[in-house]
Image 1 (spheres, each protein chain N blue to C red):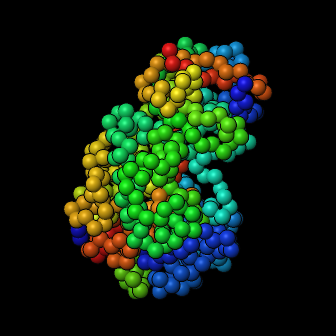
Image 2: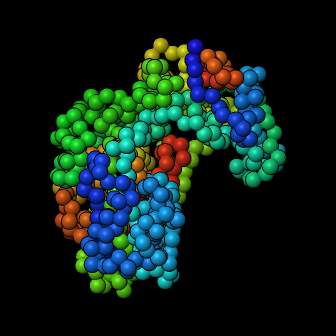
Length: 137
Length: 395
Ligand SMILES: [Zn+2]
């Protein structure tokens, strides 16, 4: 079972995102003033400065904007994983999220820009939070 | 060209010669480099009245460096924007000198990244949390993969190729082999094969984070140096011919929803710098561009306006940017971060080699070089970075 580094709290901007993750909800924010989409989570709108943000639940589908396959990471949580794909995912609701693309035979060949993907929740060996990762649809 | 600014000039410089140096501290590298750079300029320790620092070394910064050196500057600037700090500080020194706040400004750098075995590019555990780390640490993103993501998207968007990226590493190594300090660095840091390399050599080297290979990644070295910038009045009496600071620009770029990762901060900083300098990219003789990775140079050649977006491949092809090929600018003539030194924040060395070229002192000298660009980059290209552009001119 994966044993990724967990988010560390208290951290006021990101706490709600990870509490929602426990319910397998991928959340983002939208500004009630200018309708701008805010991600990663913050307490203010990055487009207009408004402090009035609504939290929304994403459908969890999008496409790979770009990616890389990491062959070398000295962090013990990743050192033994073998090659794995990190990617920016453009969710259909208009936010871009760092994650991993999983569930492919060979990440060096089977991941590409523009690929459609869907979120799934990866349970961890230790720690309270399942981690949202993406699998090709 | 008569309208170009002649307000402040680089008048002294020194680069720490060793890239693996267990017996000195970073602070010693900084102090000794400042002393040597002042000697190069023919100026005295007590002439320094402006101190600029990136908060590097052991206990440096605005609070720590002046007492260590024993100076009482009237301008204290601690601009810390990673590897672009020195281009930002040069712009600030120009403004401070222009407004009469100081006359002799000193920038310095010292790092022990190699002898302390700091894993700059390939991760390491981090315990502290903030608004970014909590959204990133679970995924095993490294510094190298951040740059590699830019390369993947660039290839997807413009059809650029691994061979085109590799050409940048080939050109840089060609220059490094003419620089004795770079050759010593590669030997001391135990490079496999200290020699010129081919595109095939680059593409056959180990993949670190797709699509970036080992020979497309900068080294991790010790090192440092110093730069002395002085007012026009002071520059009239210094030992070496002045290298004038004629334009500067600063910008930041970061990961955004719907943003274009293939465009860097240079797209914003360069037009400001070129406008101020009243020169065009096609007039530039020397381009010193922060080569943390091949993709960094590729993106910045485009964003600095040397070629169109997506077309760096044709611009660099066939060794076109070597110092001994007339008709195009020369790129990273000291050997760059890829093959000469990269102690973590390379921005200072861009200014040092640009100065050497405009003085006629480079080991890969372009005859009659008159205009140079130094573009520093700090942070992670595909994530959050600052870019600083400086344009320099010889008389
Ligand atoms: Zn708003």
